[in-house]
Length: 308
Image 1 (cartoon, one colour):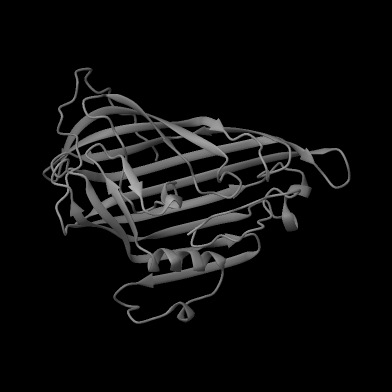
Image 2: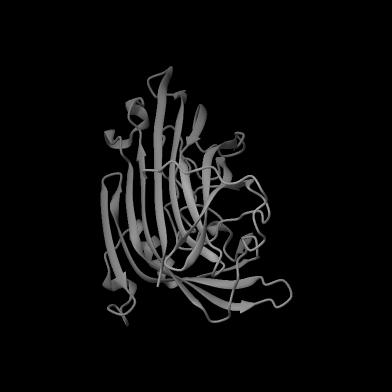
């Protein structure tokens, strides 16, 4: 699976199609003593760990010069995806406990619009057993969903959640939807992680930084949970090199608080609630001469919860 977008003259005119690519409650401060070392991923071969997923991705270009809005569309992408994903433990390294997992789709629903094109697709492993790609609606975004179904992703995860996907394109938010991993530092109450996000305009453009803080421990349904609050910002923006992702000088900002719950009883993520807002602003050349405003807001929300 590859995601490659290039925009020239128009902010969101894709040259390459997308292919095989809460409200947060205020939490009490976590005690300052070092947390116990039981904050660790634990894997058992053949386990099937299921997560219920809901996500939404929205791009707005309101406030931009019309030259940067193909067809005058100020909401070029709106995309909702939900379903059930499985994390299957294929093997465990007895030396350090590193697990080899595979993300599989059990069921999925996808809908939205890409510029003027509306798309919708739903698939269920049991109900749609034996069906082929041609049995479902055609289109670029539906092709992407089918590729996710047809190509399970293998990845390794160590005890601290450092992971390595077999497909490097899945080392990105959105693309790793359903891969239930969030890195941490055992014995630490604060740490920093970095992410990229697979989104038109932002792809290969910015690096996000999350400042993670352990904020509390709680018990729910017999599970001991550690609650992590992750605050997003832009770490860096790529320099303009070679084929430029867009014309003009663009500034990026990111915000949003996310909450991750880690189940220390079972050694796995219990839930992830991502809430990201990325804004871009700047100026770029327009066909009539001079420069026009480029403004955009990308909103990404993702909620994943362990499913018994």
